[in-house]
Length: 309
Picture 1 (spheres, rainbow, N blue to C red):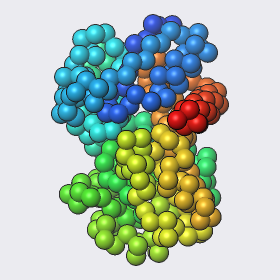
Picture 2: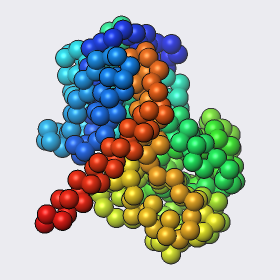
Picture 3: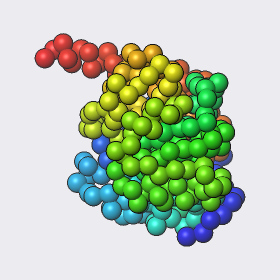
């Protein structure tokens, strides 16, 4: 697999564009509405399909065959999400330098007979962070999760000027791999691998906490950090957006922390992917407003369903 710049020539016409999302447990994803609505606003035609590995009764290792099927079916590209952002790498013809450095892909574009992997999570998180937590201290950041999302967050934080990122994951080998990629890119001392047993000590010394595991996501209920460890001068950023008010986000707000939910990252990474798929720059302000409306509508539906039972 090559690491190349300028390998993709996106289409730049009115469509129809056929794109999709490959992942597990993605039925409630807002990506179809975000992409299709913005395409409509721009006078483009776009169909966005969900390819849920769980519903297809396929393991994560089947991402290659699902990717091949979308390519054969004439898709212009696909988004990639949990749990296959790293597994998809071996099935691509080329990746961008950012995706190679992160070891994770969340967007694949089919162009000129090739499948090229990109990572829009990293710039998506960075832009969301600059928007919502622009003036917070970044000397020492605790990062929970070293998977595909965690890699994007780690590299984004260091690009934004973080002094050091302290990485905790259930898989120490994965933490080590992420730390090495950070060191290769940003220099010695910028990433530290920490065992989960040291979480309380790490948070006492940290300026902020970035959460990048599935905990709190629909199908993965729970909170990754005991609320008692959250203090008012600690900022908290969560990448989960389904639901937007995760238990972590709710607890952090209750403890007086400055909080960044996963909504901004979801929208900005989608906007970058949209431009890769279509060659047309979307209106991110409009996409943010549409996202808010979708979340509000989903919340009302959930509330109505709860009352009905």
